[in-house]
Image 1 (cartoon, rainbow over the protein chains, first blue to last red):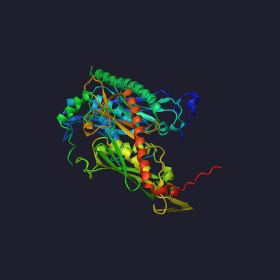
Image 2: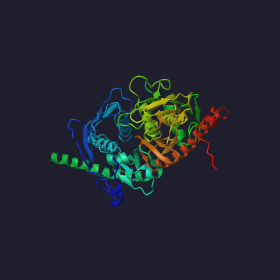
Image 3: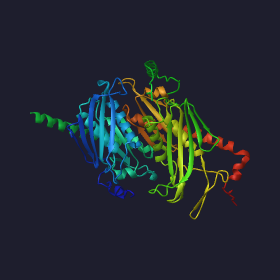
Image 4: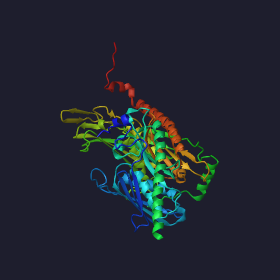
Length: 249
Length: 300
């Protein structure tokens, strides 16, 4: 189904009524699974991800000696996409996502405080509607904060794209923030994650062909979106902290 | 399966000290590639790429098969990578593919397959019934860092070099001619994507971050982060993969993309030159003009 972009040129509104720089509705909760050390549930629009963290726990035969090992496992539910599809564990795309998350958090968590240990991050994707890697990174950040694992700063991520599809090649293409799956299938986009909402990019993944000139715009919009998401997630963490303190009193 | 042994403490410290003094161990500049050598085999579709001590052999093969039912107008194109214990003892043939192999295979897939370098519609013979299945087998013979760039260069040059069997379709029947009956037909490639990998080093907090292009094995082991950018010579970015690692300044990444374009242009030129050389070698006694099916254009 070709994306009907005529609404964009007429009213500067996307199919779901957002403007170019508006994020989808992001809701998150932490401490959703009391049995795990840390847990979170995150919704970015219709993309829903559940995350549990256990660690630091004793690591058997861990790779690194002087720091904690991070293991990530992602399970995608068969009902998460439009068609029911059973995704096996050996899928290379999932393996790449796991590897990305592992490398990202290995740099942002203070793993040298826990030598010979293991931190397990388990993610379940319940519904996919674009921005999958971004949602996984954000949910993991929240769960790691809930587990109390020390880190340099939040790792927040979002997607950014470009309005016209590749072929039209016009310089007046606007960058878009936070794409849903219909937009991701048609338009070039990238996923960017920053450390602490600043300008330092931890993850940058672009899998679509795009003119080099447009990458700068998309990256700038993406980095700004990450800053907004950091504020939202920080609010969630502080709310949760307040509730814990109030229940103690 | 033994674990991969990283560099010794001495080597690590030597490398980091040299880096602080802006010296690279093999004497290159920070943005220089190693010497690239490209050779083609006697058979069409075989390319041997040497990037310093890294050596990658790629073979392209094509056979007629049935297309996927949900894509009746597209042919099939797969890229398989083989990392054997011959390169490094830590790679094993049996057992699950290692992380290096998965990432290499994914990067090649994204750069070459997903970006549509090979026009799969041109591989279709009879819609829904038969099509060509092109297969690229990448064999890493020697690993000294930067397998991705070398493998990508190898696959693209092998694809350009390959000649598939000529076919003729009459009604519902497809006749496939052998290479002896009719000259092979080159594959329909829309663009030639190449990869450039950057490695990032933060020597100490507060100090300026350093970027190296085309890292050797030692440089790869000691890096803090890396980013692979796949581009073609028209300035289109086919993929960017900075999969975690230490955070890097966004402006630095954009600068890397510009540097990548320069390298891709250079590498494309090397590929063009080598292909032209190979064509000349095969064009014994000017037979190419005789064998070509194109009509001479007569303008009155």
